[in-house]
Image 1: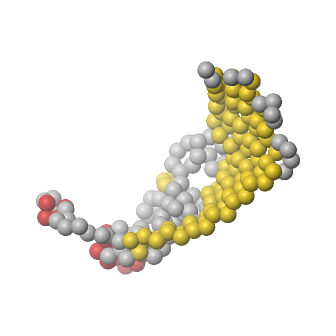
Image 2: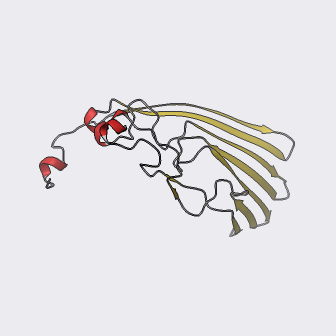
Image 3: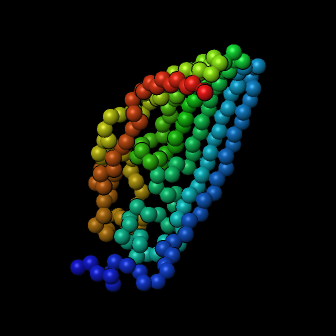
Amino acid sequence: MNPTVNNLAFSTTFNAAGARYRGIVLSANVGIMRDLAFNASYNIQSAAYIGIPQDILLQNTNLLDGGQITGIPLRQGTAGLSYQQRSGFAARIDTTYVGSNNSWNRNPFWFANASVSQTSGRVSVGLGVYNLVNSAAQQYGLIGAGVFVPQNYYGGGAFGGPTSAIQPGTEEYGLPFRQYWLTTKVSI
């Protein structure tokens, strides 16, 4: 087939489908002691395409009409503990939970970040650690190791499509290994 304006473009406005997003966010910030605080958040987000025409579903077997959109986790959460003195010293640790159906093509995972800083006058120095415990860390994507990406009716073996996670070659991605950062800020 040779590409032409007739088979590559629409000559009129066309709405391919709609989407429905629903969710709830629960969050709390609690002062434990004078200089110590705890905060947490838990999110549930349903994101679904609705009304996808059959011809689009035939060509895009990973689109699910009415199902959770691939790459948007249904559940996510964070929790953090912070300590801050009036003298300018501060420390913080945060953990993040990412549920299944995430953009890393991996099972649910969590990771933690931490930082300390000291401010004196107009100078502030900070030291931080990203992915403190090397959670879900990997240097390369792992082809075939990703979680199974669901397919619509047209993606099954009856229509010649892949029938397992290995066949479509889903690739599992990871976070970077532990990283350190140091900052210095001078206010003028």
